[in-house]
Length: 501
Image (cartoon, rainbow, N blue to C red; front, side, top):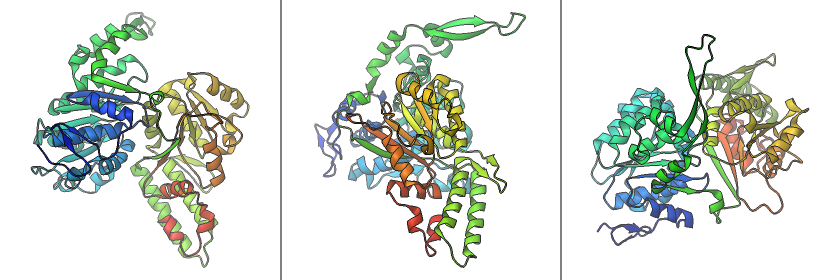
């Protein structure tokens, strides 16, 4: 029998007491996963999916069944894993574990061979965790090779987890094919995590459960799966009526699908959880694109040079520079003539990744009108035009009607607004998720916008998520707002570099 630290004890050789006491639904999920090589953890956002998987990995390590953990997910979903590994792995494992978080920026600065040399050197009794984003698997060959080599080194001793597994739902995508065809056979244990496993249609189930084991659904071909569970209609978009295409007009045998996946999955909704905190604050980290990095660095250098030449620096001067740099991080910049230019960014895709894993109503706050337009277009394209309402200066004539639609229509799930227009006097308590796509330095706007989803008698917990680019002015603005700090009152002529650099 293996020994364990004081915070994790082995009982009956295969049961342990987790480092942090699990909530009832988390303990039930751990028990449901016990002894299963494949499993789908279909828990809603904020119900502790990561906690469950980390503790499951702990159990496998302590039972000498696994040594390596590969986590694949959207880039913004990976940093919280670092915290969970620290907080939930027993001391006996965490003290010797090796963790590598893939970073596109890191990959561009030095080769994978150098960056991973120590990490990839297998050592007996030393568990390893590789955190890899799906974007890298789709576009970077070195990332794919790293994952494959990682699992091959100790084949039969690895656990592979797909976080927000809808990211592999497209059978034609490079990432989905590689994960299912190459990585899955190398993984002894496989898990998928999703709050909403089929956000658009039951067909989304196929590739996710094929990663676990194609025998669960009993069909090894997506085309055969589609023919069985979708109602197809042939249309002829061309005038000669020779080249017809089949479109999906409905679904069938859905209950059969539920029966097939039931033994290998566990669904937990927010309604099943009674011990959630009233408010939960978290971050969603976003990477800069190369274009953003170039422009951001240039503006920072110019701002630093300009302010350092001033005999006296005011807070307003610094805040103007902060906002210019913040706009770049949001994907646009204004020139000296007041004209906006679009910049490539990953913030919008990170937002969509977050929403794909959520099945309720959400309020999304944007600092700039250009953000409202961009976010509205992206969400409408992903979830349908009927899913979006807006409340901002640009739709003053229709926003009252759109607000009613958001509050009454179950198909209208997202309210996109600016704090200037909708931050006060509105009650949007049908939503339990608040996302700050972007935030300016305005404490009143922040405090008032947080209140819009609250109401007397509401007992459901509320999640607040800030999108941010770590290590930038974006991060500093959000941190100041979270701490209820007014930047204008604490920036002076002596400390302005602390905020810009």
